[in-house]
Length: 121
Image 1: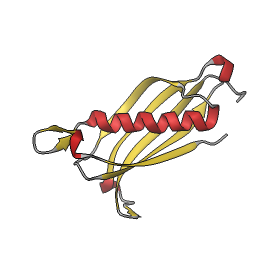
Image 2 (image 1 turned 135 degrees about the horizontal axis):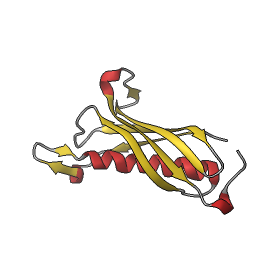
Image 3 (image 1 turned 90 degrees about the horizontal axis):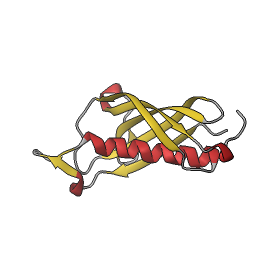
Image 4 (image 1 turned 180 degrees about the vertical axis):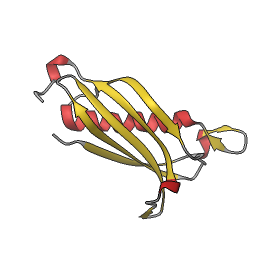
């Protein structure tokens, strides 16, 4: 079973939500959802259904023009549930920042898959 998925996205100026050209944290959560969907498709051939978020943390503001790399990783699973950790990092060009100062957000979540798509785990 593949257990990791990543995506990279450029934050658009149309994503500005707050004064001062700051992007809403909900945009990062949407990217987290996209990464989890990709992970579910890769592992279970189904988009799955996100059932909960927990421990959502925002460390830095996100601005238009930022490139974010989002990683989703299955940390545990049962027949119908997948527990995941996701995080978003700011990247510049082809060089990724590796220090904690560039971690934008992280969270834990759970998604479920339909019984008919479940693989034995």
